[in-house]
Image 1 (cartoon, rainbow, N blue to C red):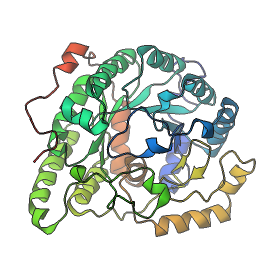
Image 2: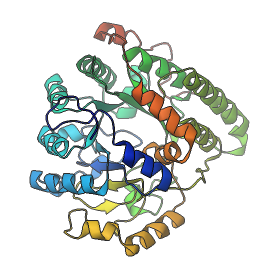
Image 3: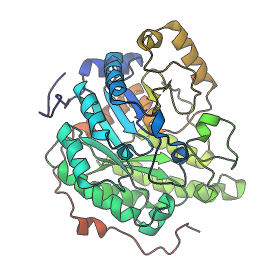
Image 4: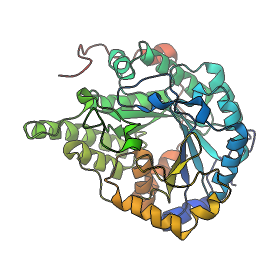
Length: 398
């Protein structure tokens, strides 16, 4: 492992170059894994439904986490995203982190950032975590609180962002805003980029995916994750087509221009162009998918899937012979069937990872952003709060 931050467990500063190169050349090294440490959550966001299925009893014990960490490391994983639900609802999250860092895994903690006390962030940073992703979808507090269905959510999230920025000051980390793009906030995206830069954060945009029918899309596993919220949907009907295209082109054209000038937009340019097309047409990109090869997903109970859309028909990652299974022809055959039968998605952690490793443009962009030093002095809480917008009376735009 190259480099160290001096944190417990020898937290890696620079990812293993050999595995990164091999992943770029072969697309067969699972360098990224998303583990939903829990499906419990303290918010009920309008576009997300996973909180309805939270179950403490299905979550891995610390002994099982140790088994998981060793297995991920041997498979070649470099970065593990700890998601949910909300990871911090697990009282033992710091112990989970200690175990995984001990296996020399690079961690990113995905959090809504609402009900997390400062001391828990302090403990995570002391253990070696240098990457946090915090959800923020608007600079209008009333609109963001509406999305989260939680009064005061905006102020709590932004306050915790100032804490994260302060704790990571002088360290080579990449705190990131995760922003879900919808009808509610489309015109806000350039200002959110400016806010992220002022805060010392990068920002990643994810086009919203919603159910077409309140009863679901007919895919039981996928229906757990997303909801039916018509007011968040960007319309694709014939009457709205020209107006929608103009809105999307104007916004994404600005974001791409800002990225090319050095703004901290984490998405690759290829993903931003695909997002622009998806928001205008509703069509997913057709460039191919590396699910189950470059990246995969693990449920709170250890169930392995190549991504969130596919049924749980693989073995548990905790099974004694899982590593043998993962490298078998039987696994690759089933993985290909799942990829070929999938209608697609816009999940940035999946599709954008492929873009980053399929093109020289993608590798160059993510490398440049990852290695950039962030010397900006973190904003104080009063300075950050001054970015709040109150000039738009419509929580849901007309």
